[in-house]
Every structure is written in C-alpha cells, then in structure tokens.
Image 1 (cartoon, rainbow, N blue to C red):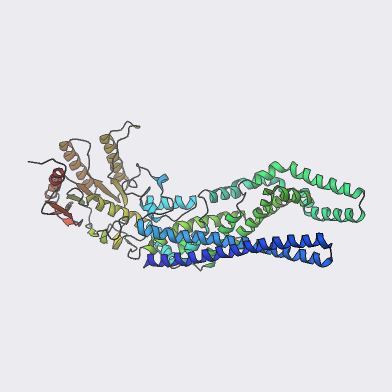
Image 2 (tube, helix red, strand yellow; image 1 turned 90 degrees about the horizontal axis):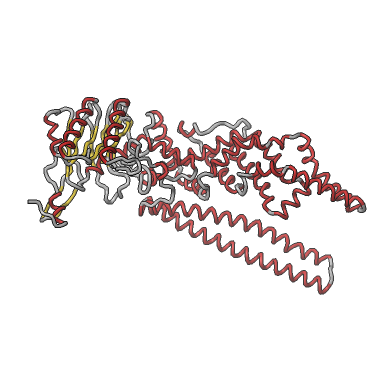
Length: 598
C-alpha cells in the first residue's frame, strides 16, 4: 500500500515534469520568434527610415522578450523543484524495493570501540543509519547518529515518540520539506551559520561608518542629478560626472578587500537561502502540539517570522551576486556603489536578524532528523512504539530484525524474568543465534531513540547496551584476536561496574584461544555477570555452558535455535525455543566439502 502510493506520486510528478518541459520549449521558441521579429523590424527601419510607430514596434517585442525571460526563470525553478521531489519519491520506492537509500549511510560515525554500534550494524553500508537517514545537513546527520548511539532518558524518549507520531500525520508535507533541501550539500548550512554567528560581526565593521553610510545613501541622487545636469548643460559637467564615477570606483576598490570578506561564504547562495526560507515557513505554518517540536521554536524579538528574515537575507545576497557579472557589477558600482550598498544592507539585517535566524536554521536540522523517523514510521505501518518502563523489564511479542526484508523476516517473542538472568543460547551454525542477539540489540537502539520498533509489542526499561560479537585483530595496533577479545571483555566489565542498567550481548566468546580456556573463561565471565546481577544474552556452540543452569537455576536460562534434517537436507525455522540445543549441523556442512566425521 505504501509503495503503491509512492509509485502513484512518482507517475504524477513525472507528468508534471513533462508538462513543465513542454512549457520551457514553448517559451524558448517564443523567445526565438520575438528575436527574429526584432531583427525584421530593424531591417524595415533600415529600408524605410525611422518613424515613430517603428519605435513602438521595436518596444513591444523587447517587453515581451523580457517577460518571457522572467517566465522562463520561474518555470525552470518549478522544473528543478519537481525533479527534486520526484527523486524523493523514487528514493522511497528504491528503499522499500531494494533497501538502497540515496542518503548518507553514516560510515563516518562507525567506531569499532563503541559499546555496540559495530556489532549491531548501526552505521555504514546496509546499516540501521542508512535505512533510516533522510537528512542533508551536517547537524541533522550528527543528531541522528547521536540518537542511535546511546539511550535518551525516558521523558525525552516519550516526547520524541509523540513528536514522530505528529510528524507522521504531516508526512506529505515532509516530502516537500526534503525536496527543498535536496540540492543542499551537507556542510553548506553549517558554513552559513558560522558566517552569520562568528565571522560577519567583525567583517561588517567598515559598513557601520556613519559618513560612508550617508554617502552611499545619497550617491544615487548625486549620480543621477549630475548625469541630468551633464545632459542638460554639457561642457565641463561631463568631466565632473566622469570624476564622480571614478571617485565611486576608487572608493569601491579601496574597500574591496573588506567587501570580499563579507561576500565570501554567501556567493551564489541566494537560491539555497530561499529554499531554507521555504522549509522554515512550513514549520511556522503548522500548529504543532507536541512539546518536543515546540521546543524548536523561539519567538523572534522583531516579531517577524524567521522565514521572512531568511528570505530578506536571500534577497540581499541575490543583489550582491550582481557583482558576478563583470559588466553589470562594474556599472552598478560606478553609479550606485552597489557592493557597499549591499554590505550596508547586510549589516542592517545582521544587527536585527542574525541571532534568531541562526536558531531558525538550526530548526531545519532538528526537523530533518525527526522526519527521518517519521518516514520510517510511515513506511513501516506494522511497527509500533515501545512502552518505556521505569523498572527492570524486557518483554517482546513478535520481535524481528528491521534490516531483514519483511518477506524473509522471522519474528520471535522473548522476555526477561523479574530479576536479571543470563540466557544461554545454543544452536547449529546458521540457525539464527547471532541474528537474534542483533535483533534484540538493534530494536533497543530504535526504542531509545524514540522510534517505532520492529515488533507487535515491546515494553522495556532503559538499558546501556554492551556487545561482544565481531572481534577483529589489528596489525596496526599490534593486537591479536585474543588480545582484542580481552580488551572488549574489560570494556564490558568496567561498564557493568559503572552502569547498573547494563544489558550484555555476547556471541561466541574467546574464539582466539583453546577450547578448554574458552570454556573456563566463558564460565567465569557468566558467573561475574550473575554476581553483578547483569542481564545477558550469551550465544555459544559450547553445550557445556548450558549445563550451568543446574548450578544456577534462578540465574541462568537455556534457549536454542535448531535445525530439521530430512533426507540429508537442512531446514531452518529460525524460531527461538526453550532448553539447550540437541541437533547440530557441523558434520553435514563438513561432508559437503568432502570431510566426513567418523
């Protein structure tokens, strides 16, 4: 249903794009026709001499031509925006169909020393981050990473749940919000904010000179007045007029280094600022109810909406961009001191609007991050918000791995006892032990970010997740696999001493040593978890560890994933079952490569 809706929107958007392209073609042919008409009128004037009606005829195509130029710019902007919105819809279809997302995958945040992110596929290609992310700005990317890297407090989680649910009711508008920012490069918003907040106050010092301001204010009248006198009286006045223009040019040149510093960072950014203004305006137009979203807003001191103030900045930068055309920029500076005029306008704007606008631009990033989760909730209607409990609890009904396609996903129910236990999970190779541990951990990461989880129901208290799964050696750090394992174990032991709410996920501990030491090391580690009253899921092939339940019947529980073997074929159901495993498949797998156990 969700995918079909995206497909319908894509078709409608493509039809709009085709229509806009036809409009552009018509405008182009019309402009060409007007140009040819203008040439024909000039030819008539050459042949028959100039008459007043020829002047009128010359003016009409010129006016129409200028009108069409303006119309073409408008239609081109509509076409660009329509293409960006089409990309947004197509990206959702791709994500639902193939799992490929055109947004950043968060590889830059990958950290193998993090308590769980590397083991649970939080960042990088094919990760939870790449599955969720719909952000373009650097600040939003950072916020999303932070919310997936550790638990929020209960109040924040509940507020975020409410905010995400409210945003979901405006999901169509969020697509337009994202389309506005589609051409934005991650660092641009940060550069503009730094420019407004840290650089401009010092750079605009020259533009606050009262004498300079007065002259720039008067120069259009002085220049036009001198021009009128020169035309009317001629003679030496033309020389004075030329000296005036040279004086204006000299003043601009004298201040050029300071003007360039002011302009640097804003060049060609008027369209982007207009897009920011459009995005901010949508956030202002909605009557939000959730406290979390309302905290994004500060009432501007001037009383003007932030979007209007950003649009004003965009207008100033658009005027400033006239200097990019050498001929136009030179003429404007000679006659109107254009660069200085724009610098003074920017100074006036900065004094009134810089602080609220910086906060308003920050709002864009906060909405982007939250929209990522709202889009997840919209795309996965079967997922549900978890219940966050104050006391120790983890109870899941039909919990699945969010990164496994729905058609292939197997759901399992699981819950902890009222007091912490170490749950030992045994089973065959490829039966689902590791995936189950990651399923529990990755859904915890979603829950603590305030997001919906891949489950029919989930209630849990807030845990500090600690994992031990993918342990690698490092030649650069001169670290063997066993040493890397010991380092990870020490990290976990230190953490459970500091955090009484820890939840540990272990997958096949101490793979880098012999079987006897592996068993004894695993045994004493489990006993340490029991001593610290720390809940854990402990996946292992070592059936001896499952026998510990006899010595610790209240602290240890046994679970397993098994296989069904029929006519020498292995079948996996990936369902979690009580008790230790009794069926293994190593012998069958070895036989497939030519090795037979006797």
